Image (cartoon, rainbow, N blue to C red; front, side, top):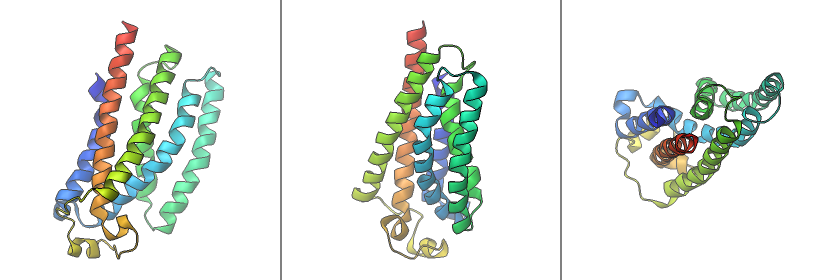
Amino acid sequence: MGWLAALPDLVTAAGLLLVWLRPDLTGTAWVGRGVATVLLEFFVIHAGGFFAVVLFGGAPRLKRSLYLGGLAALYLPLVAAYAWAMHAWWMVGAFLWLGFTKVQAVWGGRVDEDRERKQWAAMVTWAASVVAYLGAVCASAFVDWPEFGVTPAVRAAAGFSGGGLWEAHPHTALAGGVLYFCAMALVRMLVRDLMFRSKS
């Protein structure tokens, strides 16, 4: 059942790939949304380690719930401010979706059962996400990715006007996002497989 843990990441990777290949099907606005989704993942990774500790720590369920609420109260306003500045409130929903992909991958039943194993899986996955994200960002910068459907005309229609690498060449951000989410799907399948092997 490891593929179930990987499914949200695979869906996200497929969405970014579709935007990269055929923005004429998704609409040019989704080029900017795809790039913003890759940027939002940074916030999710930053929060991921804290969520793993809280979810599978030894505190009572009520206290863990309060800790999670506090973390949400910290990160959601940051994301909301980012969305407000860019006039794109959909980013809040994207942040919640990306957060869901992290939590559901290790939830799998009662949190009180196999707490140490699940916390190990969460922390390994979080560490892998840091490495994968940094690797994807480097790959987006140093690999000569094809533009595919993100032509200069599409970039202009999507509101990209130059500046930084991802602003001037948004297709590189989409490429990095596809790499990252595919890598994380593989990591989640491997971690889930190791969890079940160690349990048997």
